[in-house]
Image (cartoon, rainbow, N blue to C red):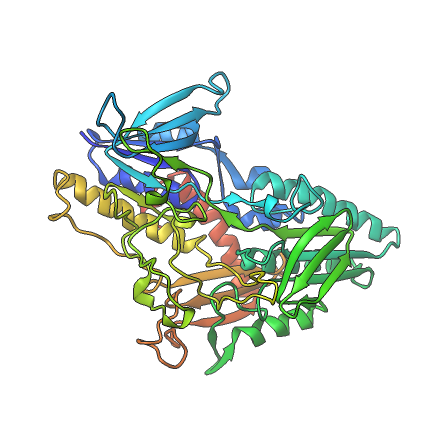
Amino acid sequence: MARVVVMGAGISGHTASTRLRSFLPKKHEVVVVSPNPQWNWVPSNVWVGVGTLEVKDVLFDLAPVYKKAGIVFKQAKVISIHPEGDKDSSSPYISVEYTEAGKVGHIEKVTYDYLVNSTGPKLNFAATPGLGPEGHSHSICWASHAEHAQKDFLAAIERMKKGQKQTFLIGMGHGMATCQGAAFEYIFNVEFEIRRRGLRDLANIVYLTNEYEVGDFGMGGMHLRRGGYYTHSKIFAESFYTEKGIKMITRAHVTKVEAGVAHYVNLADEEHKIEFDFAMLIPPFAGVGLTAFNKSGKEIKDTLFAPNGMMKVDADYTPKAYEEWKAADWPKFYQNQAYKNIFAVGIAFAPPHFISKPMKNSAGTMINPTPPRTGMPSGVMALAVAKTVASIIKHGGDQSKATFYSASMADIGAACVASAGKKFFTGRAAGITLHPIVPDYDRYPVFGRDPKLTTGEIGLGAHWIKIVIHHMFIWKAKLKPGWTLLPE
């Protein structure tokens, strides 16, 4: 019997564990360790943040779903990884601390034969003083954050109803933040909700981003096929912001957030500040803070993790100039090379390099997006790892005989549907597809991506797709009938 332990129960972790359970005979054990008792469909947090959904609409309890599926669930956070065991045993294990009521603080060793790291990110609000729900801005990264944002957004709406002008600042809270797509969605939902209430003339809406140009999205921008011609995503995004009267501040790094004021510096070394009544600023991501020890108890954190705390996998981490990186340097199998029974998927794996060109001002402050790995890519790579681990187990642990399934971001595509307002007949969304995620100029020397598969449109149809996706993926995550037939 083999035991697979999955750390984390977000999109990538939930996909990995449920797919593993469906692939493996019952004699093998699948264990999920997550500090959160609920699963959150994160892409719909944007709607919670403006009050068009409630937090209950994007959450469900994990324990009943895992019990029905035959998955062992431990509500706990991982403290450390011991890939060689310790002086008492050679069995690899993770050390976990329970967060479940009645067990809080209890420490346990959870042994494994195979380990999948899908912890997601640490939301590094501390990187910018005053950033985040415990500071002076909001986030929609977690459902609870979105619920808090909703309360203050609706309060700002009430102030506008009384004739008070309001400034809404939305975007990136740090020069190295990612998830520009989430901020893109949120700002247009904010604008939509204000406009439909007839209050648009009282709102000053500002988008602040670390992108060199809007439409970069942490992927270096893209050329989108639209109606038989090609449009760069800069023009695609910029025209939408302009249409809605949204001001754009690019190439910016937020240095601190005070009550009602955000301070930032840009690539030109200019220092600015902007006053706001409501702010939603995405934080930078980091690893969740795990460490690792060898059999003798010596820390081997650098063996498993990159300096940002994310796990090293089968990527080329050799230092190179940005212009020297190749698509082939990205990981295919998400397997740690020091310990071949450990894998990492989603935001938990360390990218080998930036997709967007790294830039810094004369003070050395980095101001450029980091690579996005959320949503569809997380699910696709988790499925590939689940299939790989299942194949290894079915071959008795002999990796030379197993089939390894690739999901390199330089080979797979992605589809993104970004909401721009949630009303069934008047809502809109931006639908974007691209292939591959990481540009490959050897295969596609003109655009870096397949021009036939990289497209973008904005309209009502994409909005309906967004609604379908919301219900479809919650159905899938609850393991309802036919869930295995739905795509990642």
